[in-house]
Image 1 (tube, rainbow, N blue to C red):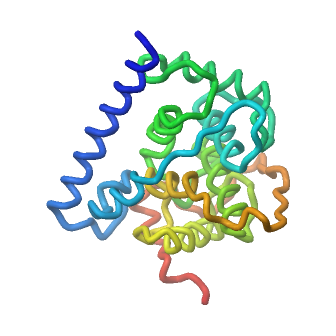
Image 2: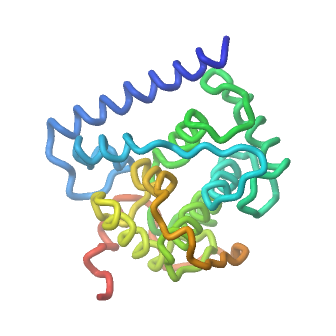
Length: 241
């Protein structure tokens, strides 16, 4: 099967899924509590706004925070390069190629971070959204690190990149969602993560530092895993002024 056929197949699959979500959202009122899919709760207008934003394209040798997010999401899918960097290194290209080859029914095997690869990474990683409590306790550390580091870099969030979706990360997500014009609930699903990746309007001239991740070997206590439980205990309305 050709690369063009691969691309068309994934595009049709996701277009059908997106169209179904838009029709569903347009026909019923959004749920007041969280589900595992933020597209179920979003309006058709919000979905269309987010899905219209182009995915960035990256290739070997480039440097960007989005590339670091790709390292994390690939690691969450079992393709960990063992390198913590925002540079598109040889190690990352090898893992992108492995990931694409493992999903060759959907993806062209190019070694680039292209639209199709971003789409599939999103569907496999964030279709079941991330909520407070996610992290080491349910093997979602890399997915949380992707969120935290994007928030730190693009929104100057004062949080730790520790792989634990705690209260500070939750509040930073609320702030980012508000800035993007999304439904503000503090949970990261497909719409919020795409907004973080496709956001290219942040101050790229500002000086920023991103410390290495500090993932604790001990599971933290006091957090609640699960969208419904998190919705009952966490509210963006509780953010400090």
